[in-house]
Amino acid sequence: MSLLVRELSLIHFRNAQDKTLIMGQGTTILIGPNAVGKTNTIEALHLLTTGSSFRHARASELLLHGEEQGRACARLEGDGRVVTVECTVTANKKTFKRNGKACRAQDLLGTRMSILFCPDDLNSIKGSASYRRTALDAFGSQAHKSYNNVLRTYTRAIEQRNALLKDPFVDTSVLTAWDESIALGGATLLSHRIGLFKQLVPLIQNAYTTISGGEVLDCTYQSTISDNIVDLSREEIQQSFYERLQQKREDDLRRLQTTVGPHRDDLLFSINGVDARTYGSQGQQRSIMLAWKMAEVQLAQQLVGEKPLLLLDDVMSELDVRRREAMLSFISQGIQTVITTTDASYFSKEVLEQAKVITYGL
Image (cartoon, rainbow, N blue to C red):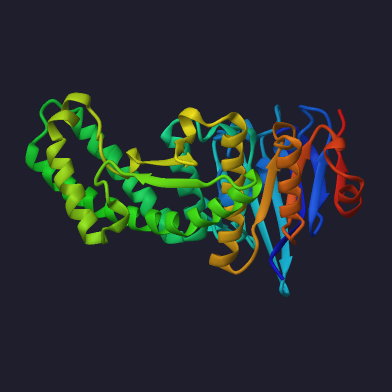
């Protein structure tokens, strides 16, 4: 049995004075009007499973107005195990504990994988490349701790190189040394990312075909380093990346930023051979993201051996009937899911009877 979230306690967290929720083993539906704390509950669950807020909130923003300290705590149970995860927030910082022992935010990764699907995700296909990179990297960071470490190291290295590019007196030999280091770190990140991409894409394609009624979805990894990046070894990627950094140095110095590397790559989707970002309908683009989230759930189970926690924040109102039914059919397959909604009519009587329904009020 998977490790399941059994209880969530919020004290002075966002707008919660003192709230305890008992979660269902299957679907938990949080119903209520806007601005009563449903999304805050999703945020707390995401924070306690990933170590970060999907709203990119500062610590002070997580604290109930007028209070000096707040807390979110989850109790997880399964396979004879009991795990507690806690986040304490003050005006200046967030601190974490796992089973009562202090830990770093990134140490929470892997305790219980969670997949978030929120309205912002529905714009990821037509949005900038950073949306799609971030989605892939966020999943990878939960699935593999090494992925998160490599990503953090590479991101810091790029920030430091960019700082050097802004120095009018920078020594080119210093840049060359940085380029060697960045090429190594970037190649390591790309090996992780492309490996994940190859595992995820077939699952996205299968889910999309089912949702769309037979349309064919293709996905290509677009690299700023090499057109055939997915076929290269890590050593070949490292060499190609280093060469590209040398080729683009003058351009980078002029632009004061690093213009090539995995931080500039993209995922391109096409439907029946037509670019989905430019020409896909809103329904098709939303179907891709729905398929993407379904694929993440499936791959998470393959990688860690248990189904993840699925967090659906106010997406039912954004999906048409066919896509809502596809999502509800999917989560009925034994996936612990927390759904927020303002309208119970999105769910059948059978779904409501089988779910744990929690009503939020003003």
